[in-house]
Amino acid sequence: MIPTQTLSRFIHSKRRLYPDSTGELSDLLVSISVGMKYISQMVATAGFKGLHGYTGKTNSHGEETRMLDEEADEVLVELLSSSRHFGLLVSEERDSVIETEAANGEGKYVLAFDPLDGSSNIGSNIPTGTIFCILRKKDLSKPASHDDFLQPGSRIVAAGYSVYGAKTSFVYSTGTGVHGFTLDPSLGEFVLTDENIRIPRNGSIYSVNEGNTCYWSERVRAFVDKLKEPTAAGEAPYSGRYVGSLVADFDRTLRKGGIFLYPTDSRRPSGRLRLLYECMPLAFIAEQAGGLAINGPHDVLSLIPGDIHERSAFIAGSEQEVRVYRKLVHGIE
Image (cartoon, rainbow, N blue to C red; front, side):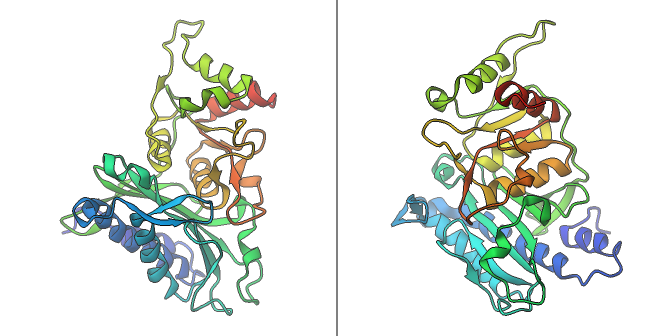
């Protein structure tokens, strides 16, 4: 008897709730999870395989690329390109879209991903992860195009992320709740550990890079300072927790509540994180779990990327904290 439910069994059980489903999205999610298993093993063995260093090249953002970034990117591109359900792929590590075998019309979907978020932390044994989102093509009768990625996050059909740390986890949503799985090394399978994750309505943790304080606006500084003070009712200040790996900080916020912030600042007036394959999928997860995600004044899922590598501010977490942030910093109820 199998005492736990594996990811593939869970996904296909959900599919049976929709008799008209073709099963393509289910197959895609399972394929992505296989890629995450590969990357998890790469991360775990990077030290003695010499994959901690830089490649000597730069990516589309002018940043030096790391060997493990390239390896993770190649794993996902190779694994997913052979699927006939995807028209095009977008990776943080590639300048332009990547055509797949289904680019001329068979594939219903396009996929954007960050293959290895937080890779600069590998040598420090800090968690890293993978983030992805899937969008349906605007016109299923036509070949996939660059324009299919330029849709609001509200049109995401599935999104998720993995965290590679003390355990390897996989969290995803297809728009009907958020579900979490943990990789069982003895089975080589992701097993269900958290069904219908709900973010607490309020929390006691804030997560932000306070090294950027001098670049923040006065209102952002005032908001963070407020979190560090006892309330009028005598409640303790918020605890500061910041790992510097987006997926790790977001995952903790999702499970424990509170707020994660990467606001705009004087050096980055448009924000730091990538809208399409970082902010949008995590915003989708946050809202499906009962939280909120904004770029400041606007909901992230209402934004339409103007470019596949567009940057954005990102504030996400419990409903109460995010609403207070938007009111104090942007004057919006």
